[in-house]
Amino acid sequence: CDGCPSIIMITLDDVGYNDLGYISSDLPFVSPNLDQLAANGVKLTEYYGQSICTPARTTLMTGKFVHRTGFNTQQGRIEIFPISNYSVPLSHKLLPEYMQGAGYATHVIGKWNIGHCHQDYLPWNRGADTFLGYTGAGVTYDSHRAYGNASYPDPYS
Image: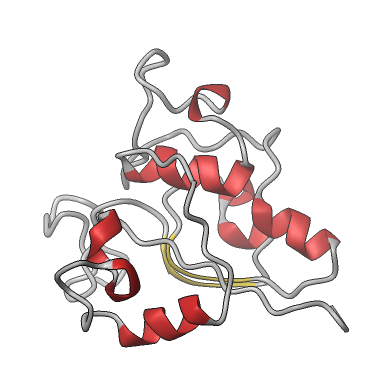
């Protein structure tokens, strides 16, 4: 997108408000690179997050409250696991799709965790020009296994 500002969105799991250096009362030294990005960028400080990965990512990527997307305790589906056969419905347009529509190049790195039950739900079919990461929850960076469990399909064997 010529003339558009660069946008880098960083989503972290299991991080409390006091866990980043620039706002921490006791750990001001833990995240110097993130602190520098925050100092020169826009910080979302009033985001109403969810306590579980899939609902949190779904809310952020769709811009909708989690109960509007099907990921809450009332509807029974909360987290997308490696063997899950459901995803964020295609009727919900995702942030990368909107960004592509505005002319941005979009790249997703890390945990997708909002659907992989069919090709249509994978990142490159939901607005990501490129994707490097894993699609479900619980995959470790060192073993590339879901929850360290060999009973889940291992794509590297």
